[in-house]
Length: 317
Image (cartoon, rainbow, N blue to C red; front, top):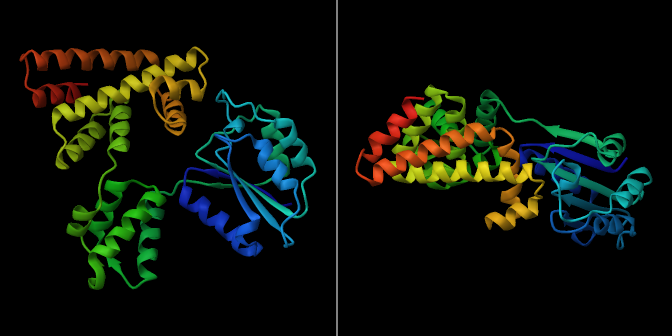
């Protein structure tokens, strides 16, 4: 059965598995096509899948961003009947790959039920910190490099357990240390940058959960990389406001494209905001947006110092 569905939140692992299928198929580049179904109707991909390969025994059709498999309302009306019919009777000369990285299947949908019945389903689970550390050591061992234990800890503190981001940062580290072939704590602190959006979302999450230990840790990390109180307040307020707006838009039945247009952001960014917003209630977001607005007013009217005000807000939760 040459239909594959890849799920999970590890893009690098999923891409490696797709690359292995491509490599073992011996298809040339003329017989490998990718379709982004965030922008293109799935019927175009299926029409291609039904077409015989060009001077070859096999062809590969890859469907990316199959949001029609989720519960998100879309402006683009996909021809799901054509997709379902193909799943039931696929072309023997086509390998169909559905890249479902970071999506959550709506298992109530007929299209999802049919896909799960007819596809080879492979889910890549996020690594534990121990597994991630083992992965890092193996990558370095393959090229004759080593890394100190304190450097490993700091490395994952900075980039999180995302193999795609970890791979990019590791490549930068290898180029930086060069022939020394030993990566130290100072090397990691010099080269590996923190992803601010990820840190701010983590801070938002910790605030909503009132996890004081996590709040203090993230705040200290952000100040170490030069973010002052006003910058952090601005980023935090914007993140909470965006999540609150997205929640309210979803309550009104807005689609992903609607939200992208209203917030003047990409549809991809809208998708992730919609996914993340589901973790928070409107009441909790409204409470903290109001508290941050009051704090901003006090700072701007000279009633409190920015750093003291932010720390009082964070550490008194």
